[in-house]
Length: 329
Image (cartoon, one colour):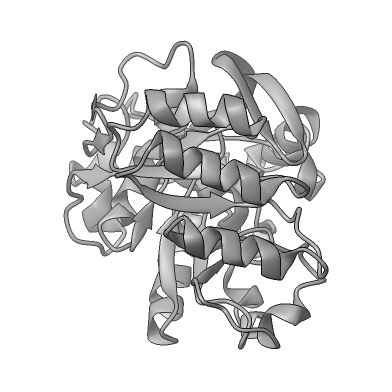
């Protein structure tokens, strides 16, 4: 084998700021893994987004990727990575780079190699950052033409926030993402406010590891696990607590695991959201292969950036088109 692995950190400015319950940021910091096959010159790329909530940093993720350089050079496969590395951003970058490389080498699309049907145009959610009720109503008014909005909430004052968003976007479907910010003494009032606003799905209302309450209270709106679920190993713990899961490649550790997770979740009657961290089109492209298998698609990362990669995914409003081979796969 003559494959060479390189890894670099890249920064892409966010348009304005992206704010959730855990904080705010003005740039997306991503890690790019590139595998070059010296024998045929083909190149495979994979992007990941290190996430501090999961103990990741750009430096730690780069180190984990670099540790696999010899194995990659010797021909390690995506299946090998499932046992060589834990789930997370580092494995995602390598998994997607290997799949991209394989697609280019054998001249078959990545979706076919992954055992999926051809990706389709999908409608993605568009995220409204956490803010005051007034600022969120204004943001909702500016995005009211979009069919699906994802509303970041943050704890105290959330009933006022969601009501303000509904006033600003009276006709959009709404998803709420609390990012673990609700508590036992606020969840029922927040759920009632979401019911009143016609919310269709609520992501991760309670902290991971402190979500037993979800099995004990009425769930008038489907509840989706995000921080509480990374890969297949976590599915058993969701019993009676969640109605849906948010599959993110950076959590699952790549498309290879994500496909198996999606199949197993479906077999259990669990609904699917395909989500993302804030990254470029290169990070969204592999996830697009699962989008038409999901009930909700949240792959708006590039829409939140001041600039994207070139080439990039094609967006028509909230419609996201499958990747072309010059981008990925």
